[in-house]
Length: 185
Image (cartoon, rainbow, N blue to C red; front, side):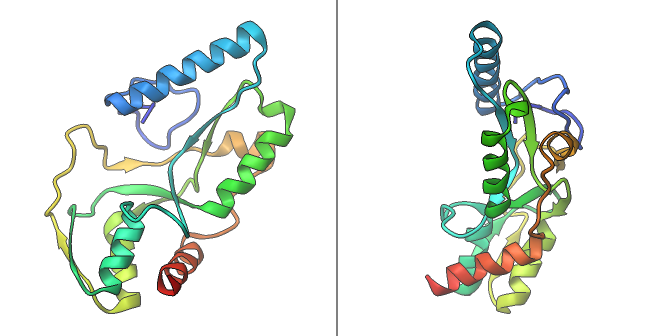
């Protein structure tokens, strides 16, 4: 959200021009924390997350909504699904955070943390539908926000090089683990 309408893949050195109140609040927080770092050596690292998913996620988020709707064979509203988003499994995020906390090279830096691989929303819905063989997505029932971009994903080169981090769990394996969690729930 901090990057605003910047094209993907988004890089940490892009000029930030957030278009939403949420994005502006995040950007102002980033500026404030980096100012504290430069002025007082306050130890801070900015982590810009993309779509994190996995077990225990709030039920009002995209993947849990689709899983639970398909599991219960319900109708559920969704957009047309032509947007592309970057999804990262929670365990990969945790690994990145531990590397950031342990590495002094991370202090004072901004890192994009995601998979770096955009996925089409409609395809994710279809994958979950095929697993359950039930559920009724109402494609097009939710209109896109006026500031919404069709493709949002990060360039993760900086975190890969600086911290020797890359995602280990591919999307489909993470999705299977997430579905298993919600099935056992």
